[in-house]
Amino acid sequence: MIPVAFHPIYRHPLPEGHRFPMQKYELLPEQLLYEGTLSESDFFRPEPASLDDICTVHDPGYVEALCRVSIDPRDARKVGFPLSTELVERERRITQGTIEGSLKALETGIAFNIAGGTHHAYRAHGEAFCLLNDQAVAAQYLLDRGKASNILIVDLDVHQGNGTASIFSGRDDVFTFSMHGRSNYPFKKEQSHLDIALEDGTDDATYLNTLQDTLPELLRKIAPDFVFYLAGVDILATDKLGKLGCTLEGCRQRDRFVLRLCREIGVPVQCSMGGGYSPDIRTIIEAHANTYREAVSLYR
Image 1 (tube, rainbow, N blue to C red):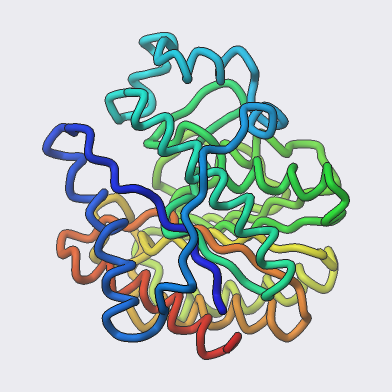
Image 2 (cartoon, rainbow, N blue to C red):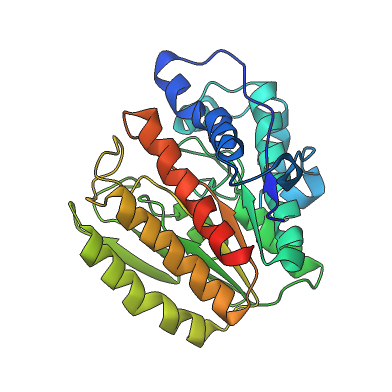
């Protein structure tokens, strides 16, 4: 079994520019079920995360204002989505999906969240379509309950995990590693424990060689007892919001490499999907589905 958190589809009206990216959260599970990569029994539907759990990494005042849909208008503009109670609830469910997924990964070796990877959410504000930082909340949840003591966050979205880096700045129990596009958003980067900024147009060979030169040594040095993996597919050359030059096969090899390393050393891994904004929805679905296909080949 490979546990996968699945969430109610967000039906609240969105501006035209925001509707397309949301389609993948409905189409990806359908594709994985249709091709037999996953079965219905693999999926679970989380309830909203508790406010107490959320507030272990987020400012209580921000969380309260978020739940009342009354955050500062300037902060609301940074989010990019029109705020609503439905959107906040969905973000809480996504966060709980990552919490529960991390617990399930302790048993199965790996777990997924169909959504998640909301790494631009800071302690006291959200931005860039991220309200709550799902992997940060889940990491703190594991630490607080003695389920893990030395966590590595591997963020391979094309955008730096600035919110995650800020939340865990100065900490030695959570190591943040972000490999991202140098000239992509955010234009003012935070300082992760380890940042690798890639040049525009970086191809498969350069990307994979850089990762292969970095991650095995990092795993050896950090010796984590849990890994959170943000598997954004916006590293593709076709991505509208990315500037790298990777192919579908290169993205697939990236996922195979990361998951194989985690499998070989026996460290549990929770995967959140992160970004993907290619013009053709089929490209997005294929890239994300490849991550699951690789997991199934390794863990089943």
